[in-house]
View 1 (tube, rainbow, N blue to C red):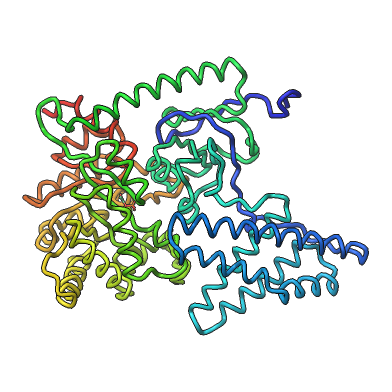
View 2: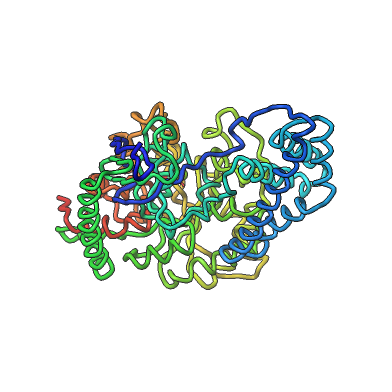
Length: 549
Ligand code: PEP
Ligand code: MG
């Protein structure tokens, strides 16, 4: 420990760089209190007043943070999303709830943490047993409240990720999609995640935000404390904790150099097409999930939006959005890309992404189970609501609709059938383009049948790799097998390009955004890439330096 700064001494670690770039910031260690066992101890009668006091303070703390979060979410998303927080606030403000806390405390002489856990577990169970699905959903709100109060009781201010201060390096074991909804490039300058391979959500989101991410450092939480100064290099995987002065100065110089080079590349990307040295123009589009990303993609020179992932929007709401809500979200988000080529993907849920309000039954092998189009075929009302919204928006924006996780011809024809039916019902004549995501070997090997029904293909190499190489994209135990530029994956890409004939093909998996793989990919005959918005300039720059023959 350094006696002047009160921080641990400098420590250098090496992990795997999974999102390029360099950053310097203060660590925020993100651990979920619901997954920690808080202490159970009995109190004596003299301690009752003190424990009551702790509960009351925690509740008032949480009420305050709920009010702030409601305002924040209303600005960021909409009023409906903010209502979730206000409803939670109403529960905590109910005098009968507080009376119940006091009663259990006095009768059972348990410490505050156990009282909170006990009562909220019971409330959540009661809600979940109700017949009305709206009330069942309230069980999750109760869990969330329990987590907030436990955090406050343990002295950690209820700190959702969206309220991180500027200049934060987020330190987490792993980030799930619902966590990442709250990440913002305004506050987070880098991410360190214990379990983050190239295709993990933490890495993917970091690349989308254009911030560096390092993964694969074991026992991160033992090494880093909130407030530590971190230097991270997402290109070579180096992390420095609490650097000494000379290391810090050297890092600042390389940060400046990096920034200058970045600025030059962005300028070129905005003003020039990506043409290889032997004259082939390659389309470079952006992978996005929000208006913020669309703005970034266009600002950095993207030719269009190749993949709009809609999951974060659906995961950020507490009920399945209506077609009007979804259409409004798209109108707002797509506005900065108006007039360009845009593809929006139908909701790809199941496996690791499950909106809590759908209560999808758990499966023993979720990545081989009901996900993507399989869920939508099982719940046609979810498909129809999205198609109605997309049909509406496509009257203003010439959209493409991407179908995720296609395996059989039916997976496509079912969507086309519904789209035609709904467009007749809505009396619309202009239909959006239809595209199939090629994410499974089955789809890649049957392009000639699929192409009869679609206008374009987009190869999702993240899933295509996991299903070809039989190695889970989120599983660190087999990350050595997750090789997304493996010869088998490249062969499948070649096959898709060959068999597709005149039907346009693009690649939107993470491999398309890796400079060292671009030449290999383009040699398969691919003419269009879609990459994280932040990476567009680097990829365009790489293409301009490649000779294909
Ligand atoms: C993919 O699988 O390559 C893809 C682009 O989809 P996602 O990463 O969202 O599953
Ligand atoms: Mg996929």
